[in-house]
Amino acid sequence: ISSGFFPLKSGQSEPISVSVILANGPAQDPDAIIRKAEIIRKKVRVQETYENDYQFANAPITPNLTAVAGDNRVTLYWDNIAETSFDTYINNIGGNGFDFEGYKIYRAQDPAFQDAENITSGFGIETFKTPLAIFDKVDNYFGFDSVGINGVNYYLGDNTCLQHSYVDTTVKNGFTYYYALVSYDFGYPQGEILPTESPIKISLQSDGSVITGQNVVKISPEASTAGYIKPTLGEIKRVQGTTTSKVTYSIIDELKVKENHTYTISFEDTIKVGEPPKPDTLNTKNFTLVDETDNVVLIDKSTNLSSDYEQPIVDGFRLIFNNEAKVELDIENSGWNNEGIMNYVFEKLITQTEKGEQRPNDYIIIFGEVGVGTSKEFVLSNNTFPSQPVNFQVFNKSSQSFINFGFVDIEKADGAGILSAKGATRDRIVFLEEDQNGVEKKTWWFYLSGANPNGERFPTAGDSVYINLKKPFLSADKFTFTTSAGKTDIDLAKEDLDNIKVVPNPYVASAKWEIKNPYNTGRGPRSLHFTHLPSKCTIRIFTVNGELVNTLYHDSELNDGTYDWDMLTKDRLAISYGVYIYQVEAPGIGDKIGKFAIIK
Image 1 (cartoon, rainbow, N blue to C red):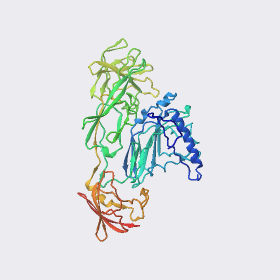
Image 2: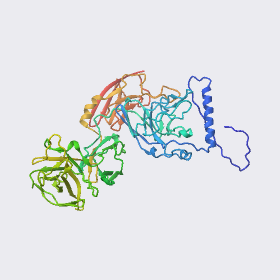
Image 3: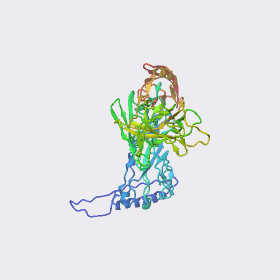
Image 4: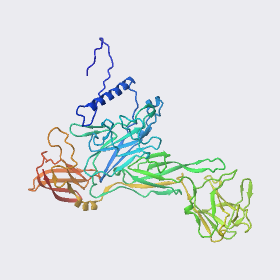
């Protein structure tokens, strides 16, 4: 580093800013013309940054990425910390500081991700990487950005919705893959500011090892161990309440599912008040997930219950809610037990002065002769309706009891106490149910439509109408389930010993998954895989003469049944060509003997 002359007196100090500028270019640039032009362009941007006191647009917060290897598959999942990013610089110049837009996943087999960086600029310089997957917000920012750089534009996605997990099924067992998850923003087109990505943090060491940052993983998919039984979540059972909404689950990280842990899901509800004549509605307010075994609250009063929302991953699984929008009649699962009866209306009681309370119950109205039931005197809209014998009863299926009801007997042509309707003149059954304090409240009402274009009749003795409601998750509802962690089945493991293999066999000069030689000299590391092994076993390798070449000890997670041997002897010397015998010994399971060949 050098500079021109400037005075520096004794005891005087001056700040110094240094920039290191590098440029890449295409292979067909022998005179480095393109590289030199790129250096000059970058130098201009560096000068602008310096003159702006290093104030410039920032990428969103770097997310945390986790990877789980499987059999010819890799599962990735990450947090949502990047979605709260705020860019002060963009905000100060008039843009939207909350400019997070989405996530991109890059995959490579080169730790520098050079095989993914293949989108070139107008100058032929590799500028952007090709993503394996993109998940972006549904908003006005999609397609290619409008600013661009050197003749190429950044792709913002196509409104696919945000996602926090991804399963890559295009990988092959034995190969090493590098995944990077970046968060990106939409930039500030009005200020000619490009979208920016969070950095990919990875460092290749001199010995060939790799140090990765929080958003980069190195992983090799492998077959699972012998006898592996995948983890399960037991049936999610409703133990309290009457909801018709459903809870399911998805296992994301098999290694984190706990053995014999019991969980409960509880809810709180709220009443959304409607302006008359609109009714109040009973809705789900939040849910809480508790690990009862450890007495730990895992999710506390989360208001995110939409089926489109990805719940956070806890203990290796993610809950999925299918919540009904409100308490209302389930038309498909309700109706008369006999045919030819007039259609009906069941709804929340509502008048100009009164609104009933929604009760999440199921009912049966059972018809008989007049006197089978008796209505209760009640007041509705300042009108008093007396008690009288009627031809029906109302049974609450949820509480398994008959309930009180009032009867608005208007249409009496067929006799008093008989539910009937002609045109707009309709009798009404008003449901009267106690609240938690024992106070009787009006809830629903039921009446016939009054229309009989096909000669429909009124209900008579022997008829019943089954009223089933759609019910969201409410405070009375509680679900429970128990998890079972992945484990080894000994009997199955004994059978799986026959699946143990050496790959490749024969080994001819090299294996496809061997890494690039990290050293300046020599052949570089070799790699031979023993697959479908028990989780704990000893591998002994012999020459055909019975001489022990090496002893290998395999002790892995249940999802990794592969041992990667560097093809060195116990004395750390490279093995010779020829045929070798191997023995796999797994305590409590058994032995497997086989052979493999090395051709150099």
